Image 1 (tube, rainbow, N blue to C red):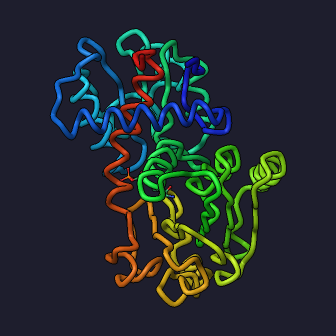
Image 2 (image 1 turned 180 degrees about the vertical axis):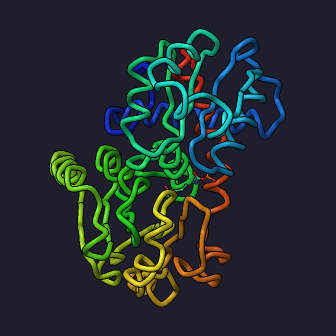
Image 3 (image 1 turned 120 degrees about the horizontal axis):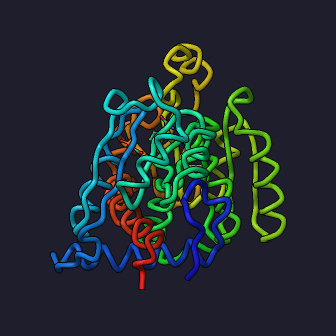
Length: 310
Ligand code: CP
Ligand code: NVA
């Protein structure tokens, strides 16, 4: 299957490409669970630029790359010249001479776009202020494992209109998934992405709802999802945000308005105000499967972008 050079956002990926990545993730997962030796990436290397903190993305990618036989270099915010002494363009041009792939976690989405424009090798967005495509691939894999399908399901997002939500909004309708979004009025998602989600849901005959009432938002939901109320880079807004999100905690009480067998997801890291312990550590919660699947999905992306997915 053909892929574009990079993975910057799932907006530009088709249903078939996303499904192919999910299949490939499942295959890699089976191999890895069996400890089957599978090292197609011997001699390959990847630079991983992290301008923000990370546990899951960093560890899953480094571990996955090592399993595939490749080498990865963790480049934290003070490790390279980028941002202080060297432009994105020059960094991309230089790293392309050393590495077969670049993965980058950045603040401004335009930074990862600029890296991709100038890099000669594939660039993977490992989270920007606007999108988190690797997370959503892992979420879809996890949902597919638990529900046996994606099409026809309803995801209810309760929380901030942030990067993780945006990635659902540009991909859910294509996969036949209904999306019900609840955010406080002042924390709605990006308006262009709202327009995109509305158009896409009309095209694909799915539901897209935007509300500020959590009880309304979770009606008919198979999955309730939330994320941090204070994303990286928003620390100064902490108090105002906690106040604004009062009443948005995911609880069994709220879940009474969803489908009886609803599951809970969160990309992590999690704080108690977003979801109480009763839900977070319950059988409903599939958050640790979701975290584990970050590894197989990033491995699938690496293989597909390197055309090693045959
Ligand atoms: N979910 C996620 O991307 O986690 P990290 O910030 O720990 O990578
Ligand atoms: N929305 C969060 C996701 C962290 C994985 C953030 O951007 O900080």
